[in-house]
Image (cartoon, rainbow, N blue to C red; front, side, top):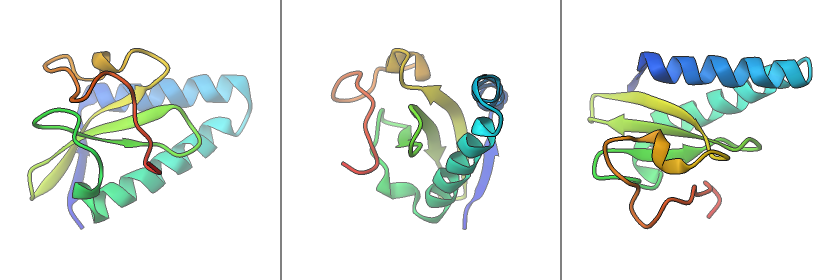
Length: 110
């Protein structure tokens, strides 16, 4: 499996989402993190199966929650750039380039 790292902003995204869900219901933040871990495991095992959202980035939707993991794969490691809330405008996830095919978030099941 490939090495995985987070940019500081992505770690902040994750902490913020966890805290928000925990404030809504005790344990909901932990469930959110479990689904994030599931997504990260899939990314590490099969980084190329997720849709491309720009020339450099891919995105994986987190099951059961409206969040995407935006990451870059350089064949040696995976760098998570954002854990993005899809209820916000998706173009904010990657400031450097707009997503291909529009700004709608996609699902893993599609």
